[in-house]
Length: 608
Image (cartoon, rainbow, N blue to C red; front, side):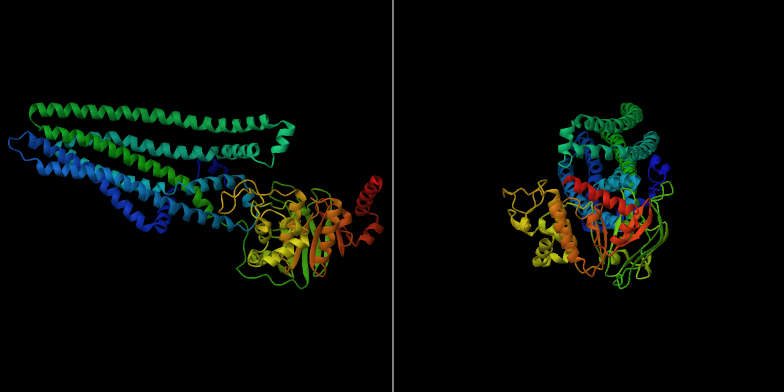
């Protein structure tokens, strides 16, 4: 969890980000970075050369028989170089930006994948930081601009300061001293702006949520039927207003500070001009010296401005990059055993006195659960909503660890088994399964990507789930996109825009995705028939009975008729196993299972 004080002031220790950011950029595009720095140095030197050549030309012009041909050619050449260099800078910067963005994005999502379970992704503060980190990957290349700007500004400053020192050391000191407050103020403002961005990210995420509801397909029907578009739109606008208010306060602060600094710079420039003109009238300076002085004052102020902007901008970018670093260096939410494979299940899975709650502030979801799923047997878990069934499944898949107690896989604690190895041994269909905006073939093969090389295997899984005939009848068969959100494939002129399946068809597709993992040790079926009509549900349960024969499986369903043939049934109530046994045993016992079963059966009989 991110401490509340960090949410208020933004990430700490931004200095730690500089070396990491520059290292990432260098690894991504070292050749282009080297060229970029050389071109930046040349760009910084060009104005200094132009100012000196201009001074020399003016002095020669005021001298009888002064030759200016060579100097004029030098001015032309310098002007051509100065005009060409920005184009080269822009090109190199774009190349570096693409390479750095790609490298940073890959590293970010690799780091997100290192999170073992779900706890991190259910933390709103982490989600805020993750979004800022994603935005930050596109701004990493700006650090090259900042570095180049700082280097170029420093070089220009050194050159113009040297020129001013030749003409007037006291005036040089005045110009430099006038710039120091600007530098300090810009750094402070940059840090405050970064803190504002961190603070308002929660508003932007909620605004995005409402915008997706208002423009997406998933909620379109309910929004129009219930007439809640205006309500959701008002919520969205309110989030944007809250963000805008915070940004506006920051803009006003910057306006006051930067406006005052601009006045100071103008006063210094005016005083310098008055001194130069007075000195020239006394004969202390030549006309060329005056032009050089004016160019040097403007150059020093411009260089200091560029340097100040580069430093303050770099500070802001580093503060933003700190969010990226916080994600890519975050420790996994659960301790992971060394890489390896989970042993094949030979005896069974045992939950031993398992207690669980999502945090110390939350109530207990599971309260001392003892449950055994023997190898080769089907165990059903039933209970009312909120009893803890889905949480128990998450623990079996090691999305969380028990707060107390153990879950044993053939006697080995799940915490001692590599998470990837454990999950490789499990197949599952979840009630809240995913519908992927991909082709039908991809949707099934996501259960086991090796199936992409074996089309017949995908078709067998689809046939077992009862969806094969539907998929073969689609415009492109299994290669038909199951989305209308965007075009999939290279043929943009193809009139096929994708097909959207019904809820029951998506449910069968999820079953096919589970069936593709046919050689797994444990199959978890969490409400596998929830999206199906009674006839289809009966067919699917019959198919699953065939599939799970002699397999270890955990079946969860609200419809008790769907679990009556399980080898063992456990009733979960308020986080505890209150009854267990076969269907006949539980009916004879006359407990809550019998009451619920008869209640459901009576409902069907009355319907007849």
